[in-house]
Image (cartoon, rainbow, N blue to C red; front, top):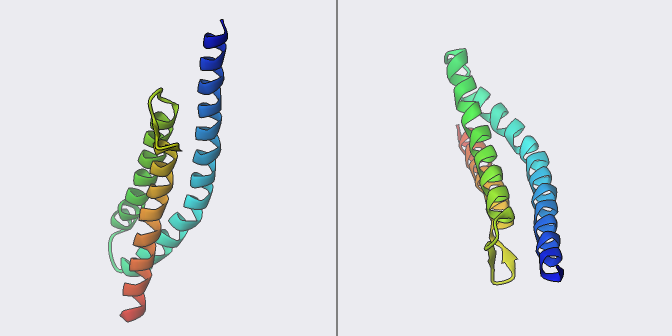
Length: 112
């Protein structure tokens, strides 16, 4: 019974960690997605409205994929890599990818 209780505690703690980090990543990701939308709106100002919407929706979909995959990795049984949870790193790396894209987009906008 003790082993079963310890397993349930580990699963619950992993779910709590996944929830906390996914909410943090999504909250900060909203700010970055707004910046990406502004930059793409400036870049695609003469284009069709659906093209600009589609280009802005792709980074949002990518962030959601990173968050959901990170949550699934975090809540799985064998996800600890060297004491650090791989799923949490995966969630935050998705945010990092979007941040790099935002910096690249604004550097290109400032040059033109």
